[in-house]
Length: 236
Image (cartoon, rainbow, N blue to C red):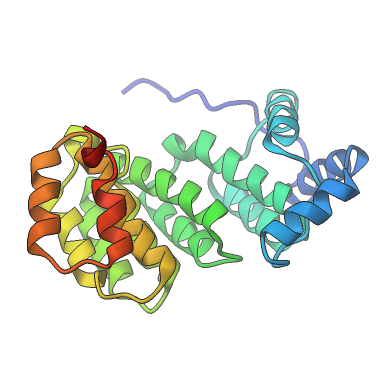
């Protein structure tokens, strides 16, 4: 088996790395934009005021120059990014996790699960759902176990990930699992769950529109879910 060559390892501790990132972001912060971002997110999070066109190139350069963590140190780094004040630094934690995900073992699902339920909102959770989908491709034995665990949980965001983690699977979509997840939460009153049901079906309609039409016709869905599910089909 060939040796896996990991990216450059940082010389700093995870805490020092986070302080470095935070300092760099604050040096180019935009207070006016930060206020707008906080208002858009209903005042739930504090921002430096950096859009993706600013923070992402900065993070990419930082990763190249200072390296990325793996294993236990990556876990500490990600948790530290979640514990600090600024949302953009949390995004850096998720971005490093995404880049290093192929090198993590099956136990990393616990880190993903914790991130989904920490400081949760659609911006982080939908990104994490994509990472969960990637992770299940590597460890398919975890998919059904965790999808069912999450859909039966009391946490709306875990439920949402259970529904949408297959968004980019296309022909590899586990249709039965997708339909089962939606059936289980089709009566939810939560906007983000109803939207997730429709979104997942709409995405699957790109691959199998007939099955989506059948599902919508034969299963009770909220008007929002049904409308979202058939949006692309109705344009044909």
